[in-house]
Each structure stands twice: as structure tokens, then as C-alpha cells.
Image (cartoon, rainbow, N blue to C red; front, side, top):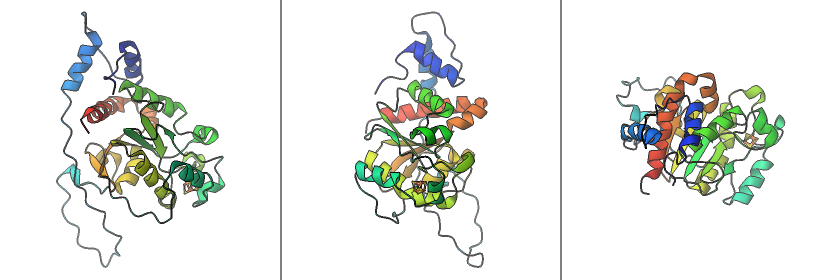
Length: 275
Ligand code: SF4
């Protein structure tokens, strides 16, 4: 894969969009040196966490006494893919057709069209977002609005793109009205489709963008602030999962962009590790 930002000028643009200051010193290596230093000081990735399945819901009477809070953030949530409740095609064409005609949840009534996914279907990196917004609903492609442009810049900063080496999909394939969060029954209804996409892509790394995607993939109710950080595993393939901020959140909260850049550098580093 390409080196981190092989074109210094373009990379500087991406980093500016991300709100990352690059100090350029005189001399031949300039930005390269600045970023090499950044990468060199990155923490080693944490060991992939062993995750415990979330207990089935129990009634209040059956519920055990609460135990102590887990001491480690590694024990936040499980990353176990449940068995799909429906038969879902095992090939891209069949899956795409099934999603296009899907009416498994109430979002089918208000969508313009389904938004399946985009990118290289055998990509090493898979990015999972929440659900389509107005632009995506109109275009039929994920992440095409302002947040999508920022996502493209973020990916480009680490040598990734939806055209070449990244696959992008959402937790739900239909737009929730008014851009509200997808509801639990909608996430559950759409679960088999995303699971199958992950199985077909077989990515080396999944990046969950934002709380909804992170909670869906990790089967957790924890806030993003607790989920971000550890490296998880997903499904039978034990695919590593990293959680970071949704680009729409970064547009609203530019202060978090530097943390997002830390996450991106980690993504880059993980993808460069030997398979
Ligand atoms: S959100 Fe998913 S489950 Fe619901 S109608 Fe759309 S494709 Fe079907």
C-alpha cells in the first residue's frame, strides 16, 4: 500500500482539512520528517481484545447483582455476529438485488432508494457508517455529502480511497426520516446485510465511524468515548475493528479532528502490518 501521504502537497491539504497542524522546517525532508516523527511516536496498537458476548436480556428479578466495573477498556463489548434470521444471498449480485427490494423494516416506506455500499469489493479496509442522509438517499451512494467529502479526505491522507482499496457501507441501507438515528428494530432488520457484506469483502480491518456503527458492530450500549481506543474483533473471521469519530461529528466538533488523525495513523499502521 502507498506510504502515508506520498504527495506532500496533497497530504498537507488533507491534514489541513482535518485540522492537523504541520510544522515545516527548512531542509529536504520537511513534512515527511514532521509526520515521520508523529508516526514514530504513535503508541503500539493494543493487543486485540478478547471480547465477551453480551448477556441475553434478563428480567429485573433474574438479574444478578451488578459486579464491579471492568478495570480495562478492552472488556467493553462483544464483537460476535449473530446468526442471520433470514436467508441472505452469498454473492454480491443476489445481495444487492435483495437489498434493493427490501421491506424488512419501516424505513422502506420513506426512502428514495436503498444505499447499498461502494468501493472495492475485496478491499483490505472496510468503513462502516450509520445510515444514509439526504444526499445519499438521493444519489444511492454512501457518504457523498459534506461528511462524505471529509471522509474521502481522511482516507486519502492515509493512502486509501473508495475507488481503489476501501469499501464503505452503512449499518442501515435506507435513510431514517429527518436524519434521526436508526432505531433498534431497524438496525436489527438490516443486520444480515451488513454481516454478509463483511463476509464477502473479508477486510483486514473494519473502521466503525461513530457511535451507532460502533454499538452495532460491538453489540454494546457504551458511549463512543468508551468504545474508541481498543482494537476489537468481529464475527467468526475475528476481523479487527477500530472505532473512531463520524465525519459529520468532526464537522460539528473540529476540536476532535486531531484525535481522529491519531486514529487514522493507527489505521494506516495496522494495514501496513504483514497479514
Ligand atoms: S433499512 Fe435495511 S432492513 Fe430496513 S428496509 Fe432498508 S434495507 Fe431493508
